[in-house]
Amino acid sequence: MASYTAEDVKRLRELTAAGMVDCKKALDESGGDFDKAVEIIRVKGLKGVTKREGRTTSNGLVAAKSEGGVTAMLELNCETDFVAKGDRFQQVAKELIDHLHKTKSGDLAAFLAGSLPSGAGVQAFIDEANATLGEKIELRRIAVAEGSTSLYLHQTSPDLPPQVGVVVKFDKDPGEVGRDVAQHIAAFAPQFLTRSEVPSEVVENERRLAEETARNEGKPEAALPKIIEGRVTGFMKEVVLLEQPFAKDQKKSVEAVVKEAGVAVSAFYRFRVGQ
Image 1 (cartoon, one colour):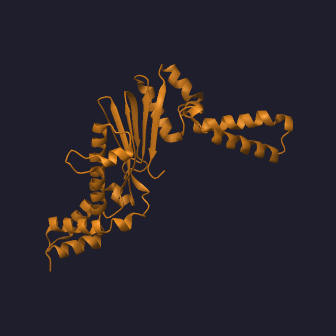
Image 2: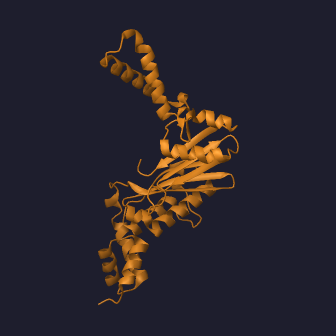
Image 3: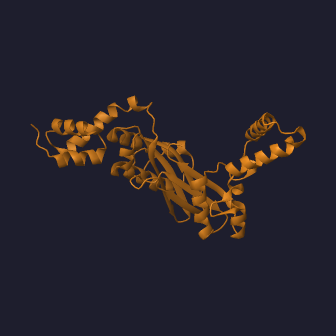
């Protein structure tokens, strides 16, 4: 019988995020050799990569790095919160965000096709993590911004890594208002920066729904144009960042707040794990 302890099983589970039964089997198969057990789990994981392709990755984390005028952010997904909490998964995210920050690649496909400083391909590195951790691991999206930015990462639960990340790009150093705007975006999830970015078909659909609702409510025909425009404006305040009431002062719009601070928002990125 292989010689290993409960602590060995625990350490192997923490390192690989494999199930307890799988860890015990690997230690049995390796004769209690910890390093060999890691390899066994990795190899067995590789054999299961294809089977995991169709699985849902609704857990994970948002990682970011801001240094030297460059801010990078990514969303790395996995299947369970158990893996998301693990050191191995978070180390994978750290290596990826360090490389993303260095390469400043804004294109996901190009980034995945590149190579890490070690020489390993980025996608191959993720596939190996997929195998070792025993779950489908997926780099879902990335963002890189240069110049004056504000970064905010939010933990939705104290025992989980950040689940929400926001990067806001300004025309110049925003000072304290930068973090305020980033936190506002994290909380209110705008979809567009300005009204002009909202697709025309989306606006027309909202207009149609507003008219249909108003007619069903029996509103007077003469009042319909004003009612419709009012409801479309209300929709814009929900989805357009600069038109949203500011989180810290609902009497002001985000646009008014940044103007008062003497800055302008030129872009933003908001990642929420699984959304």
